[in-house]
Image (cartoon, rainbow, N blue to C red; front, side, top):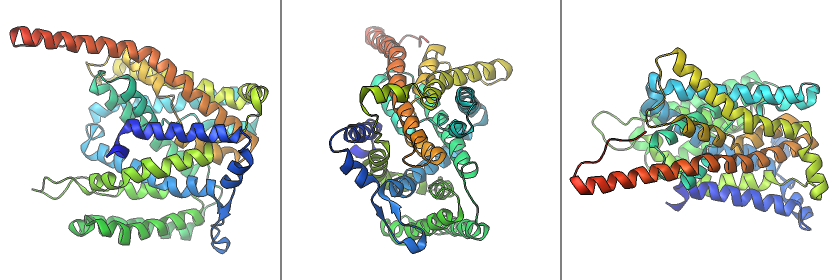
Length: 412
């Protein structure tokens, strides 16, 4: 239960990342990088990968499976199921992807090699952003959390599509057809045999082997294998059979697998892929001054909030869609800044853009880590006073309700 909470998940992510950075810049650096670069697995199958690659390509597939489950639940029974309600955060997510990508491209347009990293600033870290929001905004409107969740889910989906089709080096069509067949078989099983699939042992004996085969086929077929997690998560049914009020299979699987993702997959990925040796203060300064790092920083700190707030304003002005009445524009600006917290997916995109262990990847990691620190601090400056205001409003309403039995009207 502890590993299912957002704050614990975000905390473990931060601890793993900080530990990696500290070790990578300490006397223990050779041991850390030796562990990260230790290759294991059968070479004959093309799976002689480093532990860092196994964490990024293998363990992270579990995280993406949960992202797929969350997406499916939002589309079928959540906020994305109502097109009018979903329009504002969905289009805001699109603006929050395009604007950072353009800013990064503008900073690095002179060098095609650096320009490959244009997709690094596009994604928001769902677990990290929601954990920070939970820590600093216990009294903020619930609609604000829903907006951030929808925004983060949609821009992650966009970034995942970019990973699948932009950064693929080759395509093996027969193998990809085989992967599609495995996904179809998986969908058939989880839909036609729902009571059977709900049994805990079936997840390990039936569904996991199918997931591994799908992963292997996508890996060999040229598409980043973590896409297998998203694809399989999206075909799991959300709503249970008619007349049955039990949670759907998507909710059941998410409940069972969330601790594995929070406690193992994401921290292991962060620990094995975040460590970057900056070479002391002088090296850190050089990394921060590089166009790649500056591009990531500017894109995430400026591009994310500007893209999100400007798109939201435009959508509410030219369409019938409206921002939830409990959310102010100041609240939205704070969430836009908070969306600059990108960690898991951006690290993965930086690896795909520049290659593991390259100078470009190291500079991108510095930009990603720095942007997380700056975005969290700036978001706190905006949202902590707003949280204090909402807490005071709730206190006054509670006092008024105790006085006359009827609470005052909500003050936006």
